[in-house]
Image 1: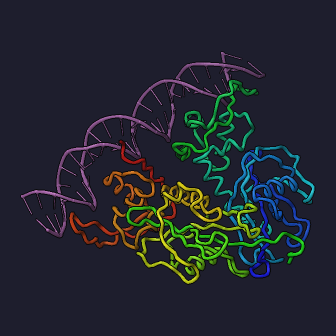
Image 2 (image 1 turned 90 degrees about the horizontal axis):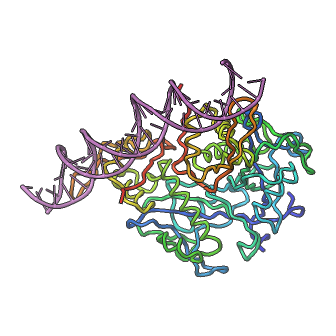
Image 3 (image 1 turned 45 degrees about the vertical axis):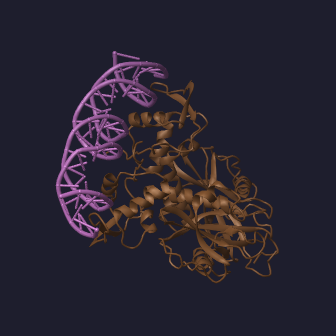
Length: 233
Length: 233
DNA sequence: GCAAAAGTGTTATACGTACACCCATGA
DNA sequence: TCATGGGTGTACGTATAACACTTTTGC
């Protein structure tokens, strides 16, 4: 190895885990127990093992620090490596984007002092709300998720294994911050090949006609992209 | 620093530099001078300096190894860090995507044995054509470039500072491998706000009516995306 | 029945494709 | 004046936004 010939780095992973809870776009954060940034909010994450691949490390850190075991989606987001981003030394972090359905209150793993969901909007508005450069990373993660909704079935990863078209529509409405026509949305989603499949079952309805339940389809891309520009004002 | 407490990594950058030359989609490669993979083709790249940020390192390595000084576009692509991707030890590489206009033959820098442009297609067809995991990286870079053409003015980065609409169309035709209607393409591109601006000058024409010259506009995204599905068969 | 939510029908308009056609130049 | 590529006009078909309307449930 060339540890004496070449610069030495520490490599970490961080996980931007997003969900929709209580009609709000939220992100999973831990309260840091140690310096630097002790007591501040940050993404779950940590050092990559010497024989561990990056995605495995991301899954492991998410599980260890928050108890979230199986996000519906997890992929690389971007790598952040500015000198000085970590006061302890030269660290490069490979940020990942994860999507989980609303899992209820019970989060919190072994390592971190506390893990909880936080609404995204106030965090985006205050660049110094999070430790390290995590404010920048959050902005990139949110942008990536918003963009992916257009041309992949990512929205289905925000809801449970069986869901109604209205639940899916609320994901778009919350994340994009606009109101969609339920009738046209229904046609677009059910008409896009491979986005959703019927289960044959219907949802319980407290009032109104019960909705059909769907599951996620096999498609990885939506053709053509869902061109949802929202309701005209 | 925690070099004794935590795993030690080497961090490199690699640059997938793409262009369109001779009506062909091409990538800039160097012939490796040393083991491992001596004599094999690889992307320009190398170790990141201890006080250097990632993008600066990418620019530097591209310049040092190929002489390409100012690509029109350079951004992170993805990070590759599987254990075992480099037989010498644990290395994480932050791959970058660069786009340059056709610069003529003269490439070749100081460090590498040789640097030259190579058509992309045969390299994609043979997964073992390149050193390390660079075949995978090339496939990701090409896919990213193809996708960006749809919704950003990336095509303008493949041509010179002043260009005709026909030159721009050829970029799409070569990279997407299809034939476009010149009339409709012209309208779409000139109609998309911020994609191109008139220069007032015209190109020299060997035959036919001389074309207007345009420069790149200020937009970073095209609304709506250029929905070019090509000429029907 | 009534309210509420799911889902379907309908229509005016916008948009895109195809291609006819005119324009400006070199030979 | 002919050939060639640049650029415009336009008709027709398809997609879609808007919203009226029907369906199916709980109360």
